[in-house]
Image 1 (cartoon, one colour):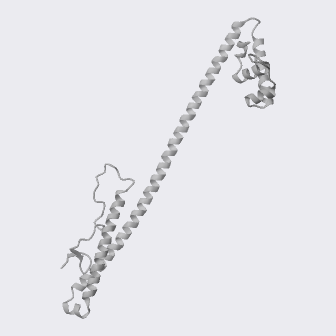
Image 2 (cartoon, one colour):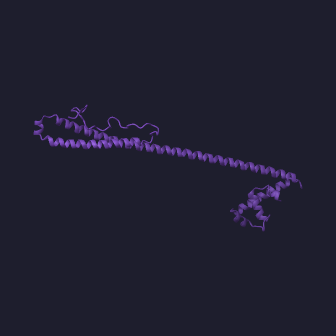
Image 3 (cartoon, rainbow, N blue to C red):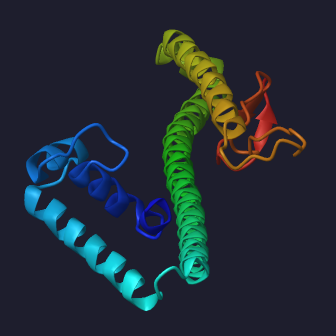
Length: 232
């Protein structure tokens, strides 16, 4: 009997043992077996009927007392069950590898999106800082041009038009703008150094362009505003 039950599946063997008290203390009804296993009563009956048909086929296929045939059939079924288990394990491992590959691909796509977003935010921040720097440079050129025009006047003209106070005010304004330009230069340099695409082994040089570097104290635009000239 034990060898015959060994030809059944684990679920079929469990149900037959519980229903007919094989190696157990008592027999159980379909409802009790269903509660123990976690299936419906009708499903337990279906599995039990299938197990009986399997046992009947084995008994009819093997002559009376031919234990060798039964053993051979059991070995074949065990080998088939082992092959099915290996196939399920291979399919499960393949599914795990596929899920891992998809997870890695998703992580790569997410990282690319995050890198693109960081790069876009960095470019927008740099563009705003450069626009502000350009405005300050234009203001510095305009104030320097006015100061240069006033300094080129003769002393009598400056005295008649009270240019001394206006010249002092313009110089204070020029100094304020130069300080703002220096702060803007530092901010732009800091932004450039925080470039997400900046390589770690790339040599660090002055990231500012010639137009972004601060104006020196002894340089001022001439009357045309095209060439710098030393301050008198």
